[in-house]
Length: 125
Image (cartoon, rainbow, N blue to C red):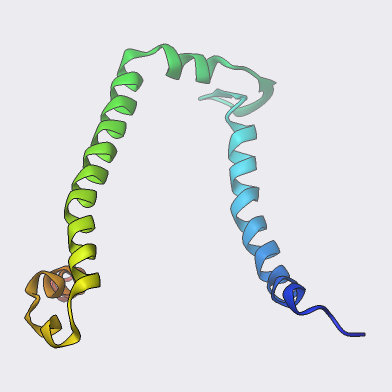
């Protein structure tokens, strides 16, 4: 019995993929189902179903403002990352290895995360 070569990686990674899918999808499914249940502060979750939670979220201007602000901040952040990252990626693809040591913006970008983490861990926060 010989397995075909292209199928071997999928068969070998199937247990991990199944475990990952179960650990990801089971909580999402349970949360989705629970969101349709009625909740009472005295008795907790009841075995009744309603759409009132979704109607409240979709009709309340407060939630609309929060969703809009979240989308706006994510779009601005994506734009800034593209404006900074695309030119830097282009320059890095063109730079020779001898010039690599003279490109400080790369140093800052690569070391800022680990340095910030080390400072925060060092202060106990």
